[in-house]
Length: 123
Image 1 (spheres, rainbow, N blue to C red):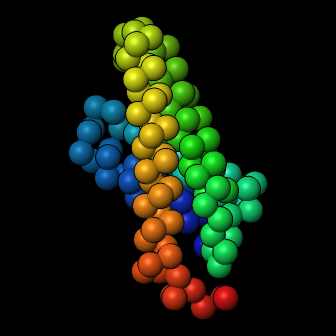
Image 2: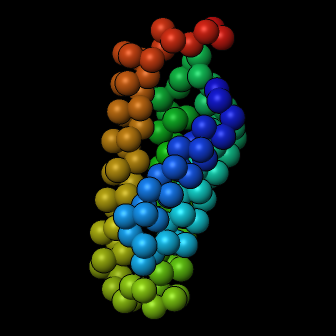
């Protein structure tokens, strides 16, 4: 597995978001890089391997990473007054974020197994 691949991808995502949404410049870049670091760290902690992708480990790492970054960004946004304190809104964001992580892990596995696994030269 490429070291810090998620962090590099998230850095590019953060830069592009910063260009599109200049008013949120520091936050979109910081949280994008934080998300990449968390995902890379969880991949290593759960031992997600490139040549033997296990769906449960990949799904768990994406759900935990998305939830952790989502909660921390909501907390900071509320603390700084960027978002009002609406518990129903935060619950909806949290539920949709977890569902997003489940769908993302499914699509990652699907794309990897169907299209990218034969490019793995280390196996």
